[in-house]
Length: 442
Image (cartoon, rainbow, N blue to C red; front, side, top):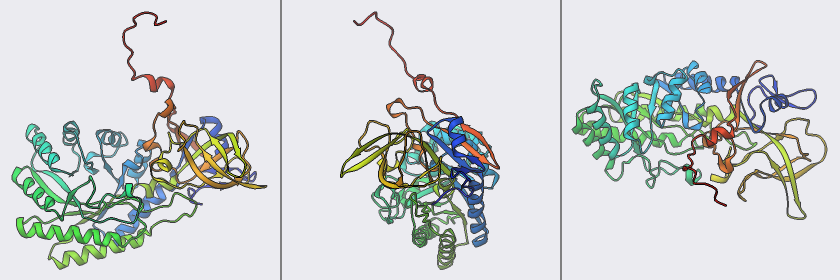
């Protein structure tokens, strides 16, 4: 099972993480509860840095904050030398709150608002990745209106026309995608010409991201080859030499109990071989290599704890066991078929097992966290632990059915601390505005 590094079962058979019992945490902070293991975060961050620095000294690792931007988590990653990839004004401000300097951030996104671009300029974000024609014009307007020293360093996000073997909703590098300037249509070359015409940009390099949950490390070779080939064409036409190449992230880590994950060492080898080979082929100097892991760092560090409630057995069909969370705190199974596993957390996995569906509490038939799994016979009040819950669960959480979003805690060395309090009903209703009362309606 892909548990955090510090996971173990105690003498009584209960699960603990970071030296803290799951039962004790559930009792103190309630459920659903998301538990993050600091040791796992640090170990995975160090592993990425070590692997890439060994393979290519001119490399840099930045955390794809969309996976889950908790300032408490980001501060740990920054302490390990990991920068930040952000996609909104909120993520910029949360990164600053965590102590990450804006200069260590890259600002992505396919529809940045003028106010967000202005904020990025005002805060001094290190690189802005331009995704479309409108953003070029909007940023140029903001630059001219600001007092910022010129030129402004930018990346261009390219669409390399690659469709990886992953869920169609996780593909971002195919030609039919909302992201990036397509190379093959000529749109990318035209974008460079528009940048040059404005005279206020420093085109530092090129970015691409072909998708998430990529388990084939050889795909990065073709991604980099297409980026460098395009860069060489631009250099020949305009004399712009790329100083930074960003082939994205998307490092695959399985959500289910298989613990499968892409080899980061092989990924780095493929990337560096392609960078060296293609740069030499076109006579370009070696650029900086920036990689953007998100899920691969934070996913294995997180565990979701749920309290078991009602059962519904349909003879010869299925047994449903309901939990006190579901699609409001983890929409991924409903959104694109993410597959999870689970174990009983409050006692040993003893006795007869049964095949059940783990159902959420929300008013949707599709609110099924795990469609089929073998577990000990569960009783109301049992505690269920779901590993690989660190990425895209809380990041995508909602208040569906007006359910408060869960609390999150960090564990380390036998201590637990709250890093995100549970929402209250008051929090959820604070933004609602009623009309002036007009008297009784009935």
